[in-house]
Image (cartoon, rainbow, N blue to C red; front, side, top):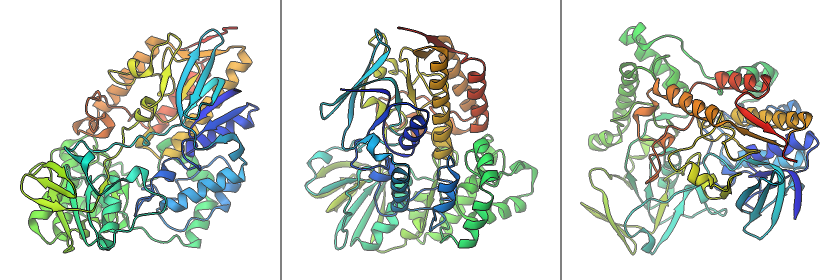
Length: 530
């Protein structure tokens, strides 16, 4: 049995940095990774068109200047293979592979209060104990299949974008159905349409899609950015991702000026569009001006008026669901080999053999691609039997929604840290910025415990309750709560509707976490169980 100081679950961006940081602090640390290599979500998401929607010069580590200066990105938005190669390089450059057990899935983690240690078991029968456990298992890693009658009887191949075959898939000459039009679907659909004989897109809820305007990165732009990395990284620690944040209200300018600003940002591409005015995510009328602009662009691009209207999102604010960044998405629906099915108007009634039947038609398909997302933020943790000091399962404690303090720890589960989970800025900011902030805080906390002679730390229930309320209050001030999104767990049947990320901004969140640490970890109970 391995006896460690820290066990890390996962070897993506969070797990790799945790290994590097904690080993550098002199701790015996080891990670368990279900995949056969590093990369996390970028190992599994190999579907055609997969790429990040944060610009590559920002979606990278800042902890080592030599690393950020030497790595060369090829495009504005890096594709999956390039991000995976980057993480493989990090693992090799910092000699992290010997600290990882690959092809090993953690199945249980139980806290032994008698010795203040976590006992972890894996699907291979391996056991390990450690004083601390860092859950770096990913915010978007527990993929889910759609609940459609008969899908289990489909005679063709069923694929999920989150668990794509490493060797790829040949769509040539085949009839393909894609279920889902979120970020993964928006990226995959244009690519699949180019090679498939026929493509049927099954859409439940249309999403707002802004153009990526992806392009090669020039040497000049990279050099200029790298020369200013120190300044840019400092700014990113306060805002998450560097955008052109307009401090003007949409109501403070004329309709013509609003239109011009939206057009300017649409031409530039990317999520920057959402920040055209400072009240888009707080004022329904301001938000509608942005939504109307996108609707107009859809109608301009899509030739068939009926299809264009199906693609226009309605019933929720722009940005309340994760906004999608695509390339040729709307243009794809002008292809003669692509059909769009509105599942709200004509739902699927059955899947039989190699056919999909709706209330209006029957489609013959060879493959089904499920771009149906994840059990976000809590799903990966729910797949592990995690039991705390009292023997209570984490799944039982969170049955009515996740409860924690600062998004980092949950009461009754001492010495277990959660990276970019519910209650933190997480998926609302550049994930790498959030990851580095969390790992740095965790490492400093563990060091403080050692210096204080403490063996255990966990939140006080009152502090946990206050933080849950603070997260809810912050969300209530925005339009985020006005959509049935995976931010609230709405994509999972039976999952409590609780807005999970902290929307108050990573700068504010960082200041709160730093203040808690500086005050001797206010809101936490420190103890020596030896």
